[in-house]
Image 1: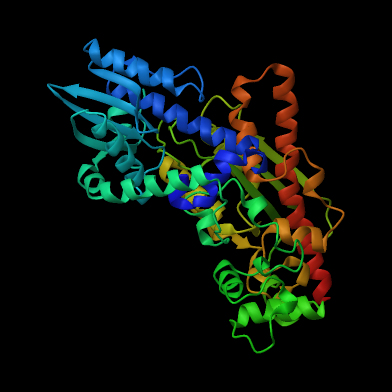
Image 2: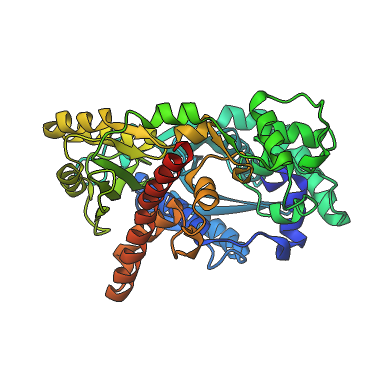
Length: 479
């Protein structure tokens, strides 16, 4: 599968592992979550035997265990491994019905994707060439329409889709790829493959730092939108200052390039003034943090549903009043939504503008809470009517600074406008890290829980304080 994405990735995986990007905690957590989904799917076919190897480098043991289980007449085998002419595959679940076998590959996604079918085609190729009578091969994936109510219902949580016909149709493709990859690995010549969108599709490659090392770290064309950047790269450009003046670009990209070259800031005071004028006190600066568990942990939640577990709120009652701060953070064990809702309604009042950064995220979470708790629907929807998106002046480029590098995220805007406020000095610096820290609370000791809770509150508080300071900055710009 690495080779199908990029032969160079397969080659480096085999011979250049020291060149891999560092693996961070977030990637480890995602991989572990995928493993958890696979183990849970075994409940669809209980009572099986496990052929999994003791570690990732001992799959020959797994192959031999699988052979033994088949000889012994086992009808359900987990992590069944097969090898044909040096090509290894492992099936998450293998089930015997009569004389035929049914293979199931578990994915933590919510649909069957093209790469899953290719994966299944390889497994079909190896197992059938080993002499196994595979009647069907299916992808098991998460059903994003399943709503948990009480105990987890694995029969409803998972969906199954046969891909045997597609797998059979790809057998020549699989064989051709295997032969090409074997030749490449034996010859040990690094494949000449340039960077491109394939570096991130269908998955992010773990050698991008190495393969992109020829690109400038500053002044790079990859500061531009992806489609534009890849077109420029195909035309031979790497640095922004190399792009000729007459190169055809969109108005938005031309503006970014112009201000990159001149170093000048663009300010449309009239539009900013028009945006700020309707804001009414008290002003509320509001931000959620969420988790998205693939396996729903709480009643009335679906796979990968955004579950708000924390908020931060700064309040300014009048233009020059001292800031007040309120917050909520769940305990990491119980469903946090009902307590968060009560706390939020208590502090957001009934009048005054509520500022969010990228308001669609917060408004969608509030709509979901309104659906989940109909007794509070009126109050929650009234909150949404008061929400204003502080991102708009930057997204619409009424204020554009070349150091934004084309981005209008709060992480790009804040250090340019308010350099004394810095995320990079915090232990938790972005939303993914916050989500990871929260889901780990349930496994930590008391001292670590106390430390991480404070770190979570510091991070979320920074998001709303950042909005306070950005609004002050915009007011100064137009005054």
